[in-house]
Length: 493
Image (cartoon, rainbow, N blue to C red; front, side):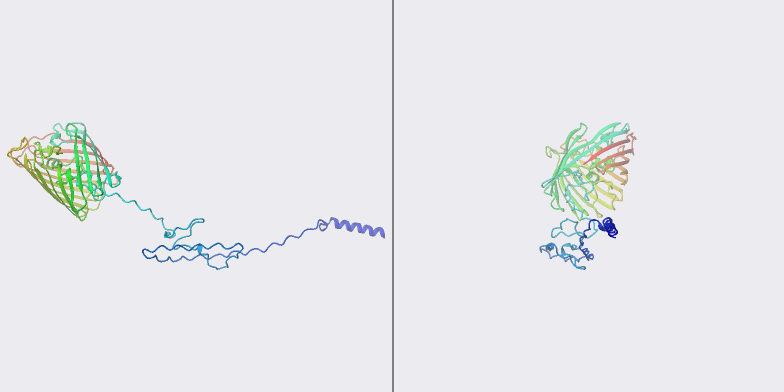
């Protein structure tokens, strides 16, 4: 019995030792704290109604200061509570990005989704007031204005550059430059090479100085224009010096602003161009009406009719001639016309009309001149008509040698049309002229001329290439072989 009981006791002890519960006693896990309540989801804030703007002159109201953060351990806000004021959306705008600062007082945020405000454009430089016809004159509507300007305090400067290089592909055997033909034979010609500058002082004192570096048959240099103005009042602008005589529209148009290579033959022969003197001009209602009135040194004509008037720089003063008086009236009722004869802007219809008169009480000749012109621009097309009439009477005791012995009355008529295709930068033009140098005689000088040409504008009217064909026909006498084909490359600043 005792041995059986001992065996039973040994078996029970072994069973207890081998069972899992008989291993190392397990330690109870600590009790986890209860899960924290989730933060309430805040409802979307309704867009706040912006406050009315403060009265004029009142100081801007500073935004309320952000509340200090709650102390550590503070209970979260109850569900449905209003969001803190620091997180409220500003009037009309979204919240700044995390970490971003609020705008300073007085700066309004744009509405959500609105495009950013563009930076204000710098003020444009004031246009340089200049007499009509000057190389320095900008377009009234800003077209073909000075492409480069330099501002130094109250001084505004712009370069004046006009380079015209020509190539004659063909010229008739009887072509003669002194008779108005573009060339006398195949080859190259430096038509113009002008250099100078124009500017404005204090906004109402314009001036210009330029020289012709290749003038005349000997390619000598001479003054092209040199003048000072006072343009403080639009109804009375005064200009004094060597500048264009306000008489013919085609003559007052810059040498680089024509639709064809050369100005009309009648204009080159009968308009006085640049002389030394002074004139006043006024413009009303955006050039709806303009007037010009001036006094210049007496005009000197060449005995060769087609050579025109001598452009007198008057370096020695008025030595041989008296005074010439000029007046012109002009109207542009549909808006100001640009400088160019072509409608490079492809603009709405614009019309310009003018009439001029001059009397040169010269020491060699007394000359009366009358001119009238009309220019139309519309959607890239242009049409020009001009009439010129003059009468020259020699003095009984001329101050210079004179070949003219009797009064001479001359007449010139010009008609031109053209079209500019802005998309391809190409313009085409045609001009017809009738010219009678002496109405009392019927000879070979009575003629008509037809010119057709094309122009390609690389950079507006600054850089362009032109090609012209001219046919001249003598009405009486012997017909001359003086047709010509010419090319020209021009830089006009």
